[in-house]
Amino acid sequence: MSRIAYVNGRYLPKRLAAVNVEDRGLQFGDGVYEVVTVQDGRFVDEDLHLDRLERSLREIRIPMPMPRGSLRQVLAEVVRRNRVRHGLCYMQVTRGVAPRDHPFPRKPVPPGLMVTAKNLAGYPADVDAWAAKAILYPDQRWERRDIKSTNLLPNVLAKQAAREAGAAEAILYDEATCLVTEGASTSFWIVDEEGALRTRHLSNAILPGCTRAALMQELREAGIPWREEPFTVEQTRRAREAFVTSATSYVRPIVALDGQPVGDGRVGPVTRRLFEIFGRHVKGAARNAA
Amino acid sequence: MSRIAYVNGRYLPKRLAAVNVEDRGLQFGDGVYEVVTVQDGRFVDEDLHLDRLERSLREIRIPMPMPRGSLRQVLAEVVRRNRVRHGLCYMQVTRGVAPRDHPFPRKPVPPGLMVTAKNLAGYPADVDAWAAKAILYPDQRWERRDIKSTNLLPNVLAKQAAREAGAAEAILYDEATCLVTEGASTSFWIVDEEGALRTRHLSNAILPGCTRAALMQELREAGIPWREEPFTVEQTRRAREAFVTSATSYVRPIVALDGQPVGDGRVGPVTRRLFEIFGRHVKGAARNAA
Image 1: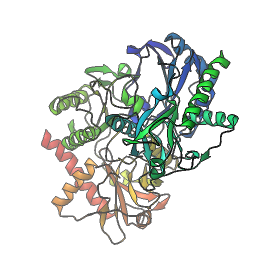
Image 2: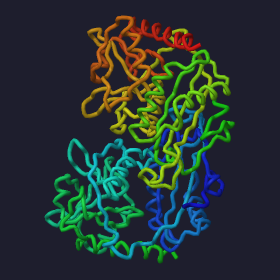
Image 3: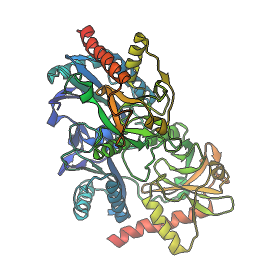
């Protein structure tokens, strides 16, 4: 748990880290966030996350709370004060505090910025132990899923349904088309029944995953082909392999869907290789930055 | 503006009224809210709002933060401490404070409760001055709009688009079907080109409006017929009259849509009559409760 949090200019013990009841992040979900992994005390893919933060803010017209260089310093300071070696750093930016009214405040107010950090295990040693179960669940989210907003109630309900089914993730699909979108907090990939590595193309229907993008760069360098195109729930059920990616899931095998094995129910060769490649990326990022 | 707010058991000056950065309302939009009008120091349709609060909480499995009788006392106390004669009382319930993780906290935590109140003008004297313009705007919200959650970013963006077009409300429609759902913070009604009073039927596509329900009860008592059925953007553009309802809009005429007059661009006879009827409801509610 974060012991020290940064809130609107101050580093505070967590129990005192608070925002006003009229912060628009609380009353309207009027804000965005990012989660960055820390490995060996260094950020993994920090620039990808800060690029996406700036994009999300631009899309909903909230200014950056401070220049990127200053924000990097705040993130590093929160990590340092919480003595995080392996873990994550969470940042949230809101439109700020103003008397409650749906439209943006007429007189602009400073955006809110909250940053926390906590320790977690580092990159998993054992991909078989890292494998997880998932469920399929209707995608009930709004139409701008490309914006990493804190309007996360549909994600919360999907994740809770997963947990109650003994699973770690909910793989979301559009009920009208039966096309899979992504995981409730992850990008989703399959090795289809012909052996093709696939993940859905970017659009307003999914979040542009930073780990998704970082893995694609690794695939390019390793000469591993993949396709960005939608696939159905049925194609997912017939897939040889499946896995999710995210800052804190890295490459995580999905070996069961709705209680049925994916492929033979064990971690497949493609997923196993990508887990290894991404491990080198995560640890290399830490090394390069050091 | 609320000078005194109730937050998790304490009445606090507004600048000190704060919630922890790990409140799930802030990080996940994991909560619901209500706005109740105050007229002559009394709540209007309080039971309808508390019924809906309980329903919203039930749908996302957050317990009531306290029994309804105690909650009523808190609301009344916030109104009293803020010396509100005519105005509104805002209440928000969140799933509470817990280390950030999408599913519900494994060990339940107490729900968060925040209540504010502020003065506003009372029921408008002049329906013509109360008339407003609106725009039509795509409905980008999630699929459980029947839950009054704080996942309001799509509503915020729609309301801002309305303001920038010189309008007070955005009337939302489904892009696939061109069927109107409701206003960004109101229920929406038309008198169609045949003279029929219509509003959309209840489903997951719209919020079950308390003012909508209260007005229907008044219609019933006055013997005024209406139909609950969807209508298209085109039918809306051809409507004789249009109006919105909400706790703070009461019955508010919409006399222009996207810059074009609705009917002859003036408040029509049906809307005028319903404004008068609802005024008696609002003032009568205050009288009856007094």
